[in-house]
Amino acid sequence: METDDRELTPWERELQQEDASQGRGHTPDDGVAEPSVAPADPASASSRPAREPLPVSAEAQETPDEE
Image (cartoon, rainbow, N blue to C red; front, top):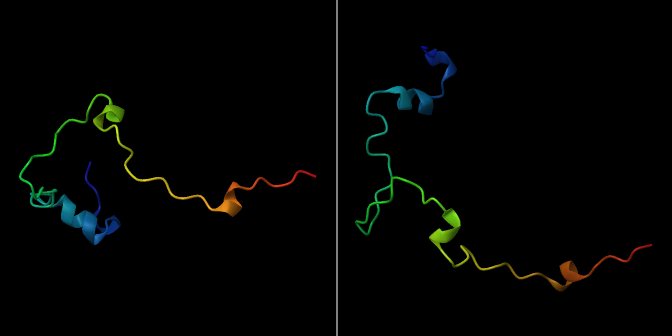
């Protein structure tokens, strides 16, 4: 199936070129290659939360009065 180039954005046209993705991947600074396969259980990848929970303001903790 051939795609009409007029329907593609410049970025998509560039990706259609041969070897377009070469050199566009993530290169880790530490020299450790990233895994090519995702872990079977992503939750087991880390026991720490990705981010610290945001603080909740006192106003947000108040429950609205029911009428």
